Image (cartoon, rainbow, N blue to C red):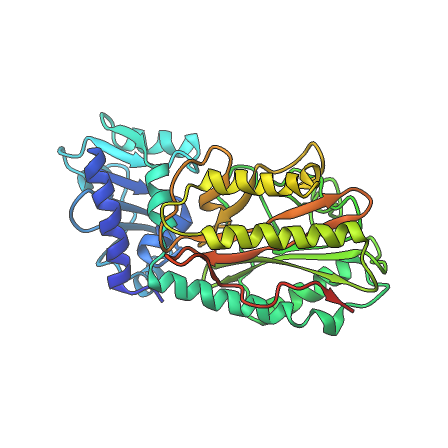
Length: 388
């Protein structure tokens, strides 16, 4: 459970950023942002002034919010007439998360607070949340350990004749029994994911999801994840799953094979390990995120597999790692154009992968924490191909 000390550290960090930008305070309406600062995910709006105590305004459930939240000032959401009195005349500039707030909600609050200027604090919020505290890193370690415990069980149930869907259902059943919450929160518009992917064979990559691998899915309405395809011998069986425990997300990929593996795929796997190790060693404060992506592309091209790196040829993802925490797509991103330095405490899922049409998907993924000595592996089990 979030402590008062932890919550106030987060609030104070945000307040310093607001003061530096000359913003009088910020209104948070997105549930995971409210949870991050308050410790409750109840239907609420959170006001964080540039100085002073935050106020949590709860629509439902007020009783549960008062039990769960560590903030001192928790009130029922006021009427439209009463709402402006909470802010006073000195509050003129209000931060709002334009990246996730619907226009309808922005219009609603601008009508409640006429004469105020609403400014975007999306980047500030994401930067604050990108650096994990010791408490958060412990949550990620627990999440990673639980996720790894399920990956270790795969040889117990993976067998010939299973469909991708059978495999996914068994993995997800065990993941739920381990305590996985299942909600994979993402900030990006139009992105959704159901727990993870269990895929086999070729053509497993194309789809709308912004990642290297997608899967066929079960219909055009849900075009990702496991299909009804039967798993065959001598092809890579690809597991890419998230663990969500106490809200904190870890992400990892492992490859299993029943039989033998095509030599080109074996070579691609070895190259994915080489790229991963290159990035892991460089996960230190001050290293520029974009440079790690460009170096990864260069290594893939030097290995003769650049056309297969991070997706189907012509549909490749433009990143090789993404921040994780309470959301799957947090800052930082090891991506083209993300020219910012790494900071100690950031958590990143590193996922060099190669896609071969008609052959399959090969790669690795682990969640790491940035330290002065390089990446600390949070999803800490062997990276080896597992032959059955």
